[in-house]
Length: 227
Image (cartoon, rainbow, N blue to C red; front, side, top):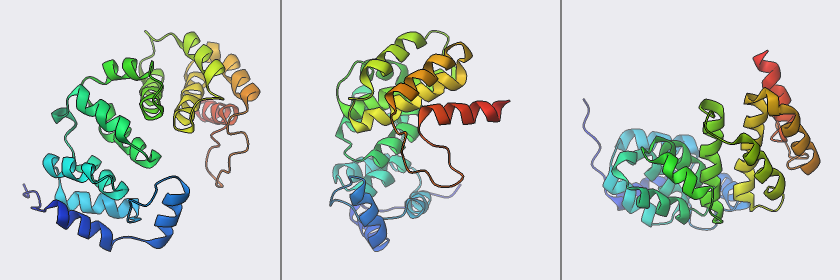
């Protein structure tokens, strides 16, 4: 087995900075990344992570820099099981950019052994990024194992809260609405009605060949693919 690459925080930051791209910086800034970034393409960050392999201590140091690219790299070289529930909660609440939130949820939160306890905690939280993580985990439960979830209560919350929710949470609440409509035929009509009435992401620009995030279109497209 190939040994992990020995690299310091300074080395990693220099490597990321060298890979910075002005167009990516501009796009990240448009999406809320702020100035603490180099603008590295996601594929290039993945390549750097493959070189380094797992390095939990380096990951924690990179996270502390608050640099977007460094945090994305940190997520890929971090050990989820080496983080306590408190550690994961702290990481989630410290995120300021949704791309970082989504990678953290996908590669760390979803792999953590205590994710269900965290999901329940975050679903009752007003913090935008905590709520985003909670709804992300709930969407996963709806798709994979919803037997002990109260889907009707989730629809009640989405109907009452989604329009006024912070954008960071709104996106994943909408995803949960879509998952309920896709995976629960008996609730599909109500999910479609909620999506249509609320109109969230109705006019969202969608590239050709991609599925719209507007819940009614999303639900209908995925159901059609299943049939």
